[in-house]
Length: 138
Image (tube, rainbow, N blue to C red; front, side, top):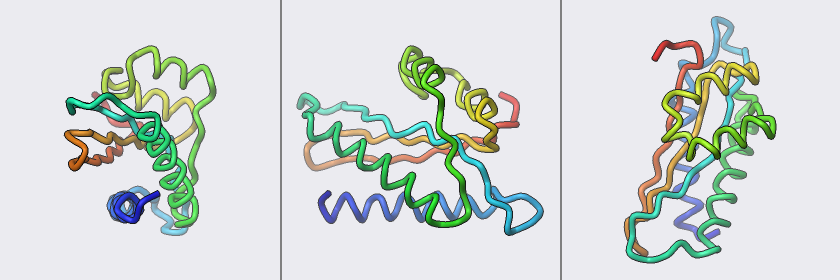
């Protein structure tokens, strides 16, 4: 992974852990259970998506997952295959109209976490991370 991508992941992790300060329960030592739904590539550039870009998204998923766990503040809850298939069938978390909360509740997580990487051009990427309270109403 390039140093730019590594720096971007570190910035994403810092943002998530800063938001995570309010995630823990009354006991500050409690580890928050988070359903990580992965990153989605949104290619709005004029270039087709290259296989290397899909691999970078997978690497970003892995790095964020490892970083969350290594922080000691989060336990990452994996989605069962059926739930992952459901999410894919909906066209991703951006198109599932609130399904992220239900998926998080199904795996016993208090939060749902996912991200998008928008490829604007070969030089411009927007990385966004979202975190939702699984118990909040729509």
